[in-house]
Length: 318
Length: 318
Image (cartoon, rainbow over all chains, first blue to last red; front, side, top):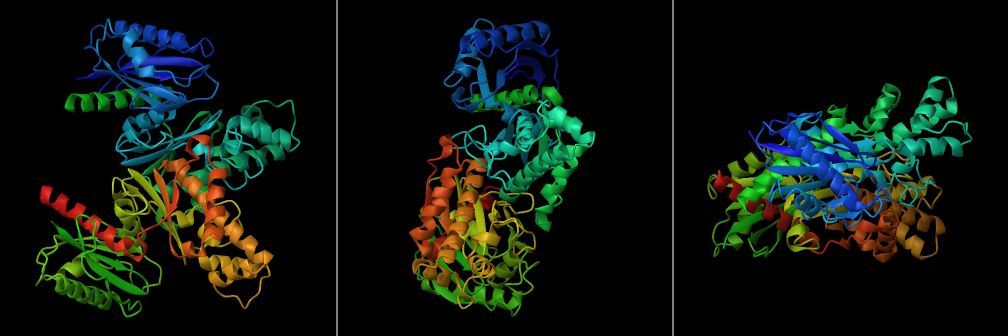
């Protein structure tokens, strides 16, 4: 049995565990806060420190054959570097993640392969391995939370593309978002209407109660009879459903997995989102499974480990 | 040197030629009309007859190792059958194309591999082999004519998908088409706004001159100062450009190829289409090459031959 160290690096915390090639998480999931504004070097130090904790937890198991890391930002998986990123993590663009981690662990894991993936790609790879899309040849994912991310998984791996941008569905032009600015500055994108904070912004822009400041507040108000809030949520659900229809029209995947914090809103958001998708799909593809993610917070750790196993095999075959 | 017989079956004519594995078309392109409403068996007879003509043209060359056919309709390339089709060809759904052709040519090409692809997939495969997208790892195509078709080519082959529907971009939900019915019956799809006949319908619906009956008429009127016609063309160009942006956001391909009869409209349609695409793309992918198809009417013959070579190699390796 081989093992890989899976690491999930998010904007607020880092999580890691040892994963067997069966997909089983074999050690406790260890976490530490992400020092998002202290600089990349400090974050790499924390990752290495967390990895040592996991290795200590796994002292009775064989050493990992590879390390997998899912990270925020547009990632070059061949070089293990950050191509571009928002300022959620200071100075993240340009960070040499694979080399930085390998160097810091060279004493305990000499010459180890470190495979880096975008965090949503890692999340989706986990779901396509052991979660809601297990066994799919092609799985598409939309993750709706503070932003809208996406991923396309082909035969277990994120779709490799020219600018490492494939699946970035948050920037899909979408009907109904025409006059709303996205976080990227362009109007009309899915994220401008679909993401949690976008729902709050749209609710305020349409004259809603300014004392409500989170998507959870808006959903609660809708439940209590606030018709404007209900309309904003319906528009958001429809926008994400339209993006599902777009993904299915372009890719015809085996399954579309929906992840991210918006899942917490439950059927009042999920059901109309699915209905909007199906209403826009031709009969041949209308029955596409559209399912919630099932691996929860472990998905990116498991998916990063999957990527590490695949990279390790590729290295061995070269 | 190996050769394959490439065949392009459209709604109005069938075309065929022998193609070398260099991509060169080695015989005259032979054509005959498609007897679209006489039944599938008659069409298969005509294809076989046309194939025999090409074989006679190529009597001094080695026999083809395989046959490739691009056909209208949703095609199952593993079985060589028509999964679904419009009534442009009567009773086309369910036709066993690969078997029907192989049986009819068994005396001259016994046990030959017949690889069938969707016609736009074949067109795109040709462009990705020897045309506008030559050498691309991932190429996306949009073909705008009497309908709007599309294709995704990965490493030379059409993207294989669950329902053989990948790339059917005509049914992409698109801003601005919200109230216009698509040929599939659903409102809001690209084809409802982007295709040639759609431009005429939209022009009439907005009060345009009813004596204009073709997209060419509308483009000519726009050139002569008809502002409504110019607006309809601008909306169509913007819709197709938005679909390009959607393709790039989902797939991040190396290149997007635009084909189909609408190319004949020239820069008054092409340039605003490209501008609309770039305006909706984030900087990382904004410079994506968006180029016209270059192989012209030979593209589907060449692409079908490419698919035949690949299928033949796969059969040999099994």
